[in-house]
Each structure stands twice: as structure tokens, then as C-alpha cells.
Image (tube, rainbow, N blue to C red; front, side, top):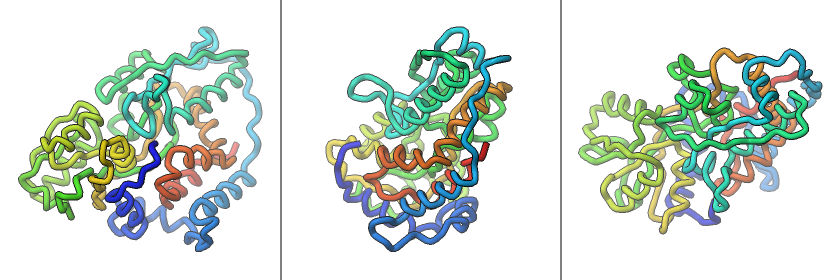
Length: 333
């Protein structure tokens, strides 16, 4: 992510922790589990995160090497072919996107690369090739169901309706839907968008939450279909829409790529609760366990701190809800 200071975005990011009363109730409950942030400027929330993970790592056991015997399902397929196929998003910054070198990169991609290493060790392969397949909002679920990919590595929200078609790993991130607007719009709340145009990608949990919220608040905004995130930013820059709805962190990463990032702001209001996880085919418990074993190890060991810092460090310390998520999913062996 470019090293830029987003005037509007920075303001709202700094106020994020002071706006907990606006968070969904499930977030408020989890936040209460985490200690108060350290006032020490050298530590802060990141020190609290490290402390929590240290306690968790001491409580857990070092994972034992799993046997490659009696493999079945996806693990057997990977063992026999020597290849794992992973789906990724090309524009979902900073989680999963195509880098300047043309290769997949991002927070989710880093996690998936650790998963590949863990699976390679479990199936006892000297080398495991990775085939990266680009997927979109429209194709990602079908790609998992029909076997085109073994694992979807993007920014997909785990929901009960989606679990009717696919399985999900343990959570990898927690975010919330919000709105990207221009600073000159003087947007304060959703009611200010009455009669305005809001862009959103169809088929997303953000779209569903936005429509529901507009209906509940009787705001008569027009929803405009957007193909992808870059299209949403372009539409906002050109003035063809007045706001673009997506997950908060994605909006921040998207605005950072704009010609003039300082002209944008993130609304304080949350539209939804978005727990991210990786998709895989239903009914393959051994493969799901292999994926979750690596994720839990990352959370227990504290390596997740470095991965988070690489992609989100410039936005400030992790919110306490994310610390809670790491702690709750740092399962012992």
C-alpha cells in the first residue's frame, strides 16, 4: 500500500476506537474480553496483541507432524498431483490482488502461502506447486463447488447462506461494511444520501446489508450496480455515484490507489458485520482441519502480528475486535 496520509481517511481511522457504540452488538461483546490498550507509546495495542498471543502460545502444544497415510479427498488429490489450486481476487486490496509483478499478493495470500507450506509438510511432498486462478465475486463460489479451485483466498465473508454451498475455514479477519465518499459531500450519516446514488457490487453481503438498512431507515437512495472495486472508485471520482459501499478496510486500500487520496473519507457508520474466511468444498473435514491447523498455529505463535503489520501497519494498530478474533481462533493442538 502506498505510503500516503489520507486526510479524510486518517481522521476516521483515528476515531474508529471512539465509535464502538456504533459497532454491531456481537463486536461490543467481544471487545469487552480484551484488556484496555497500553498507554505506552512504544507498545500500544500491538503490545496487547503480542501479550495475548504469548499467553495462548504457552497454553497450546507444538503441532506434531501429521501422517500422510490414509489421505482422502482434497489432500489425496494434492498428494497425487503435486499441485494445489488456489483462487484469488485481482483487485481486493490489501487482502488479495495482483501485484506489480503480476503475481498474487496481499494479507490473505500471505496466509494461504503459509497454508500451502503446512499442507506440503502434512502430505510429505518434497515440492508442492501452486496454481493461482483469478476469481470474481460472481465466480468464486462456483469455482469452489465445481472443483476448479481447492481453496479460495480472497476477502469473502463467511455467512450461513453461503455455508449451504461451501465450507469455510476459521475466521481470518473481521471487518464491517461502510461507505467511501468525497470530503466535499459533507456526508454525516446515511440519511444524508437520500436521493443520492450509492454504488455497490451485486451479490455481496455489503449489498444485502445496504438494501436492508436503506429499507429500515426509509432512505430513498438509488443503488447503482458496480462491476468491481476499481470501477467503484472511478465512478466516485467522476461523480456518477455519490458513495461507494464495501468493506471498510477494502475502501481504505482502494482510496490509497486514487490520484488524490486526500479527497476521500470513510463514513463512521457501519453497515454490516463481515467475518472473513477461506472457502473450500463442503464435506472435506481433513482438508478443512489442515487449513485451520495452520491458521491456529499462526495465531498462537504470534506470526500473525508480522503479517498484519505488513499490510495494515500504516493504518494504525489492530482494532480490539480483531485481537479478540485472533485469540478466539488460536486453538490448541
